Image 1 (cartoon, one colour):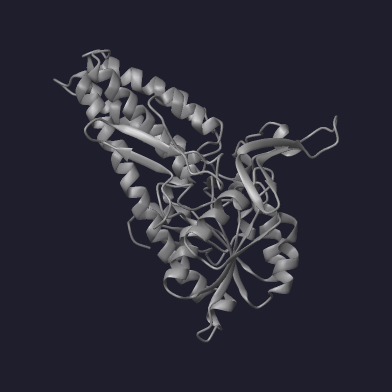
Image 2 (tube, rainbow, N blue to C red; image 1 turned 30 degrees about the horizontal axis):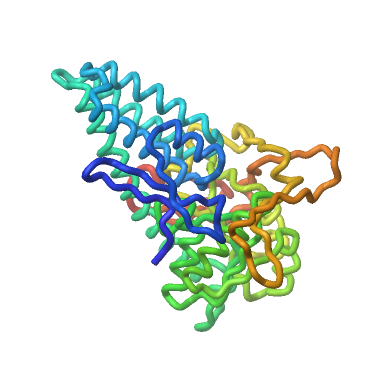
Length: 390
């Protein structure tokens, strides 16, 4: 059973618990998120991360807070006043991780909902709260369903559209992934890691490789943790080993499969730093490069990657590393230490993401199908918003 990053209960009263990803892979511990302020802090500190999971935590933390305020008689009975209050909270949450488009999409969708309910004749403040809670809970349910569909579409594409997949003659395929795009980054199952899970479930995966994903090590800490948990045959590599791996495993690695934090209308994709490098390496080695993302990650208002604002994070994330003390093969989870690994005084550039140009991407797997380029070498992403089949 996949790991749960988010535990939400609507009854008897809404409550939200999140798996603390800063403690993984050594400690599995959940903490409560009772307010939007707590949700904002959890996202900002990366105790929760991954574009879909960020949106879920933001939306659900506010649902819990609104329920508690309503129960305590601390909310206005005026529907429009409550709608304005919710809007302000949503905008506050939106600022926690600006690159993740899922968060902005959720804020916009929920904001329009409360505005509409707030203006309806005869509605009260409690009606706005209940409408918001129902919508936030449906987002959680649909995210898991969409991830499973992405997994199936993506797995089918890897087997039918890659050179290794098309010529495998019954052999299983190998794939390489980056960062963490599994249950820990979503409401459940995962996007790129969901494709790996689907290949494994169908008996068509020989091996998965994951990068450590410096400087925050989401691959080493989180993806490796999920792969081991699910008993998927896998190997961890340092980021700088990817080129050597693609050369060594030529003819056996079918695809590089990654997630996305924002996909522009032309297919340019912002994802964890290091994704661009992998795309260049994949192109050189003739390996297909597949992006996995729900439609909520596709930002049709952003024309290209040039318009994507990339978040820069703190310098110590590069110059220091933190973890439990390990001696003689034993890990002491009670003894966390921070170690300096860089020369004191050196300057640091630490972008959280990079933008991979569309020309390096072969397909974008969504919950309604895999979008490929047309005869002019362009992605027509608008087509997947016109119907639920592709």
